[in-house]
Length: 392
Image 1 (cartoon, rainbow, N blue to C red):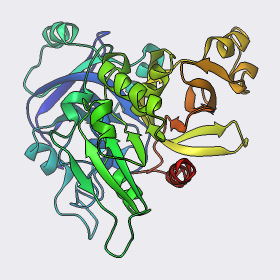
Image 2 (cartoon, helix red, strand yellow):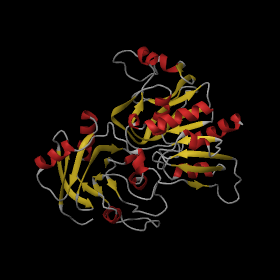
Image 3 (cartoon, rainbow, N blue to C red):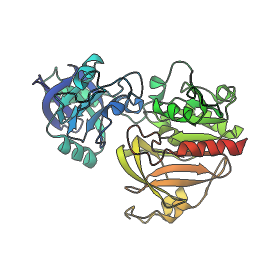
Image 4 (spheres, rainbow, N blue to C red):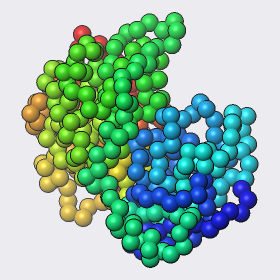
């Protein structure tokens, strides 16, 4: 990449970084977050869960393999802005159709290349995710900071309805693969690889808009219902919680991931809260409490379901999460029978999975479709099939 115009990045605490403009020339605002993945920048850019966020990549060199037409997780880039340390000068892949800088320009995404991405990441870890702006048209940090402080935050943001499909569509199994199940997938910000993974297992997936009602979901006659990942604050998506409760009452098998897991948590009476700086990357260790197995998983979320009160009370004040609190292993009551916390994050103890004991429903906070990332958890789609078999 040749030397371009200057750009600045300003965080809401006043931190200012100067660098080189990358992507479209302009100005953008959003929540400043970081992603620890060493690969998969194209999937990150096109993941609807990043809507409203300026994403900094901790990997030092981004753009090496260019941009192709096979890996996008949606039909557009969703990040508000992009921060990298060193953009690749050349795209070196036989699959590349164009360079990353050209793609950002074509889609109007403003970015910045700064040498201080490590310092930026440490700042976010210390202070938490915060509002920010990237500009290649302004040079006054104080004036830009005023606009940052006037911009909306992520808490209370209802973004699922802005990224969802405007109309239903179907993803069918590949030719020659018989249809074994029919699933209604509620698109809260779904990634393209999710229905693709289900279709490969003989699932005919009917993808529905985020604001669909339980009656509309059940009218499709599904063997199971899937609630997808997505952006924003789950507390602002009451429509999805109401739909989830209606499906739970009907007793149809449910599988939720990421935002969908938070929606399940709220539907059964758990609270949700904003994480300090979220989980975003492909290297998060998660323990399955039923087996003790540890999965390395792909994440992208800034909110989480709260532990049930009895589990939170069992945690020693100030204790490190090197062990699972005893209360997290015990069933807790919900309006739909008993449930358990099924998975926890071994870095910080965050709830990573919920399973109902009296209804055919479970969820995980991470991404089993692993696009990009490890394939440790892809068998969760098979578990969903087993749950639908048992319900027949």
